[in-house]
Amino acid sequence: MTWQNILRQNITSWEQLCAFTEIDLIETKNVNFPLNLPVRLAQKIEKGNLEDPILKQFVPRAKENEKSPFYQVDPVGDQPSRCAPKSLKKYEQRILLVTTQACAMHCRYCFRQNFDYAKQKGFQEEISQIKGDTTLREVILSGGDPLSLSDRVLKELIDDLSSIPHLKRLRFHTRFPIGIPERITPKLIALLKECPLQTWFVIHCNHPRELDTDVLQALKAIQKCGIPVLNQAVLLRGVNDTIETLQGLCETLADNGIHSYYLHQLDRVQGAAHFEVSQKEGKRLIEELRTRIAGYAVPTYVQEIANKHSKSVIF
Image (tube, rainbow, N blue to C red; front, side, top):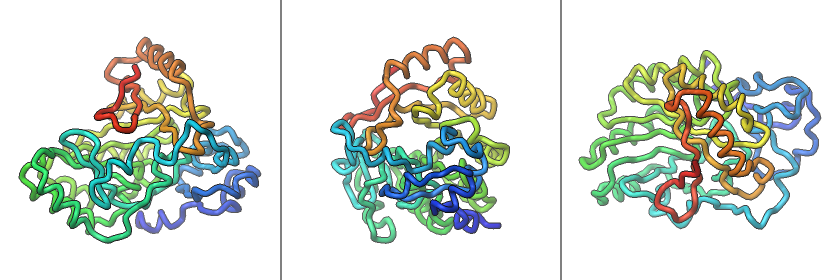
């Protein structure tokens, strides 16, 4: 089965999710951000357990409708950083392309769930802008999820970027392999191998149970191309806010040659307040993690603050 067909089987209805998880989720029907969950991840949810850490990341809850004065629709300042319909520039030497609004899954804490995605096709304006800014060295492909794009569109985009002399690096930010590792096809691997830019692959994984054999094998295929694979996690209440869970995640990543890059403090997007863990608790967890595992396996604890010119290191 192709990855596109697997994607079409995602759970998107309340009735299907309730039947699959054997949980009454009636309270979730009146939220704005639509349900979207790959079957692979749904299969990892403990039946009948509303507190399951996989389920919590993806199931809409009534708490999302609770408004907080400390939470915003654009918590990281994406809109003020927009310099073309599909590009954001916050940091020196780097530009981010919002390649698509499509994702393999909808995480309930997503900081771009309210983003005003551009409707026009192609990246002509963005490519022209990148060509004209000789200070740029790196392009980050984000979204949505860049692996939602077809191989044909990705190849055209990579070819266009590779032809720009001052660009040296290309970075993928993706959660796709966690839910649909079948997306890492031989054709995509060949495309990545042929890219003349130094490529980096940054995944998003929060819990060790997300990393099954198929996922790790898909990521290993990328590593065999000479492409470093890094992980970004978000510290989430009830998901990974115990030392045992964080240790399990970081050790699984390290055992498979994946660098634990960042542990993010929750971006304060409206509707996600129930996920927040205090920075005091986050620091305690990182400090404890450093006593248990090798330093190279411990992520840097960071926060993204709007209008700052780099990630802010918390600990």
